[in-house]
Length: 265
Image 1 (tube, rainbow, N blue to C red):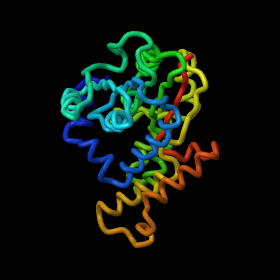
Image 2: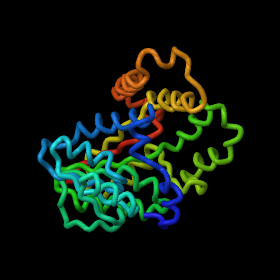
Image 3: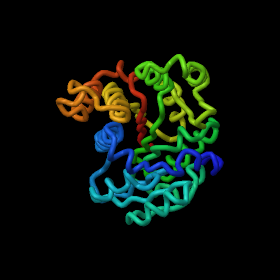
Image 4: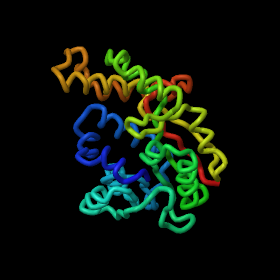
């Protein structure tokens, strides 16, 4: 999706499976993804595409629920790991999918959008995902909130050191430092509109509870957090917070990540 060396800089030596299972933030993100996707998944058996699916964290969960999953990723070592885990995985690019029209009952793009800095490339990936989805099926896309770095750096008391990067992301929606694209809610809705998708809904994938998870992981990295942050179970507290916030659209901008879902017409 990006030049391979740019992707490698982000993913070589990074264990996404471990992040999503061993940290509070990762476990929280995984649970929220499963919560929200569960609202759109048809009854199994059905065929789901996991585009940019990495080593198959989401694909394994879907398979365990009875779905047939086909994964595509641009990183060879991700594809190898997914295949070793028993997933039908293909090396490829989200902008040029190898499947025929109307092949899947639903498609998840968990990573491609924020790895594509050029607008036309993002629109191509969305059109391709829509093309391979059957009428009535869903296309779900993850995007990063433009304000996430501002809130995160503020909570960590690191904003003075990171102000230039934070300002750049707020103004442009892109960080050259990590080759990452960030969205506002209106921008994300606009990019998904007009490609054969209807009933577009943008969810707070992480919501306000995500900031508790981030705070806890920061504490665990350096020292033991205070008891007030570990009792009761902070994962359940974070999930409760974001599930409550789901009822109030005005809280959508508090989320560091969005999950936008549209239905193929």
